[in-house]
Length: 167
Image (cartoon, rainbow, N blue to C red; front, side, top):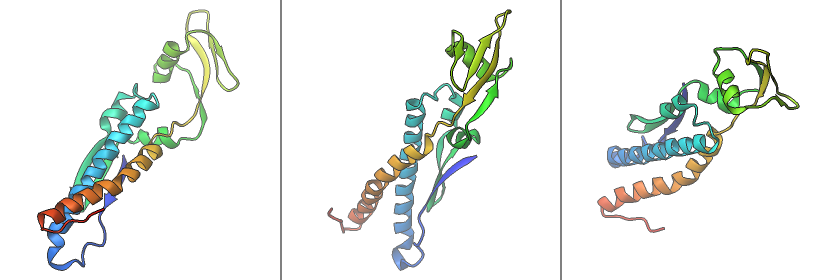
């Protein structure tokens, strides 16, 4: 299972306000993980991986504890993102066989992939598969937005205590 973890560390030495302050940070970190979930789902749609509906539905933000939130996904999410380029042979019963029949309607011969039709209408050959990076770009966008989200959460906490930060 792929997990992206957001932790609030170094909150032990805050003394009396520790519990309320750390819960405010925990809420802000959970909002960051929700934004990360949305960004990863947007990136799946953008990279046209939406036909992997199980991957799309498996991405969930979850609050583990008061100071820790995670984004979970199925195991093969990281494999799609970081796999080495390789050949996949086309055999009946595989999802890629069905995908090839739908997407590559005519005979295809490229430099790396070779697909040909048999006399009975089946397909033979192999397809060169490359990774589709979608996690890093989504997480970079999330990290850019995280500073603002955490500042808003902490400012909300300080306003409730009568002290506000002006930026």
